[in-house]
Amino acid sequence: MPPLGPLRPSPLVDQATRRIQEQITAGQWPVGGKLPGEVALARELGVGRSTVREALRALAGAGMVQSRQGAGVFVTADRPGEDWSARLRRAELAHVYEVRSIVEVQAARLAAARRDEADLAALDRALTARREAGAAEDAVFVEADIALHAAVVDAAHNPVLSDLFAEFVPVLRERLVELVGLLGLRRGDPGHGYEAHADLVEAVRRGDVEGAGEILGAELTGTLARLLTA
Image 1 (cartoon, rainbow, N blue to C red):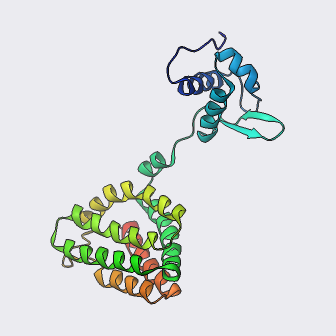
Image 2 (cartoon, rainbow, N blue to C red; image 1 turned 30 degrees about the horizontal axis):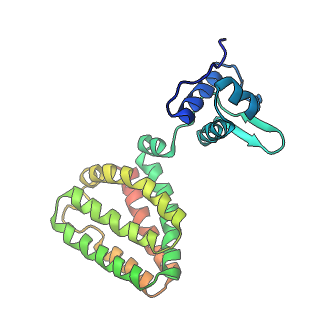
Image 3 (spheres, rainbow, N blue to C red; image 1 turned 120 degrees about the vertical axis):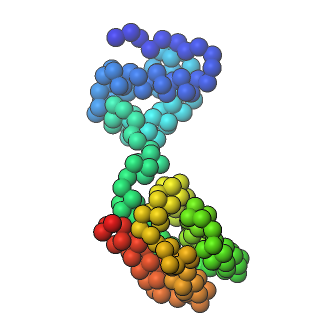
């Protein structure tokens, strides 16, 4: 197997990451094995230790290596792991909905406990927009529905929950438009589920922690049930 070799001037961290990854995939450092130290890698690649450190951090984020304090850096996989967004895009919608329900029900409970006046104003705007979208095409309605759910999650004042929900949004936006048409959710009810969503907003407004969770849980569970029997 050829040596690593010095790198050409360009984004050095990207090159270092790619070169180390190639060596791991080729079996130079097998899964479970220990990588050479930063000094040795830097010398072989012709870069500074800081570049190597950033490359190893990137590989750790891809699930290929793991640093063990006092022991070194060890190989945990010979290929990068699939990122969360890609995993969601190919997941079954029913599975996405199950996880979405877990996330959003807890977010609704937190929102009822933590909401402030700005949150309530945002919820009112989102609920109004959702009602008005009842006269629009499915794509517009779905966008308004997601925006209301996002406003509930944001009212929980937990940035991790908001970021997690944001990961679901591209999948929901694409797949829910299909689902609305497939299940005929708006047939005879253009503003599908408006009353339940209005009740959710009111539960958050009055600080009803359990009520908010139950209302949203029932709404999501009902849609999931229809999806599973479609």
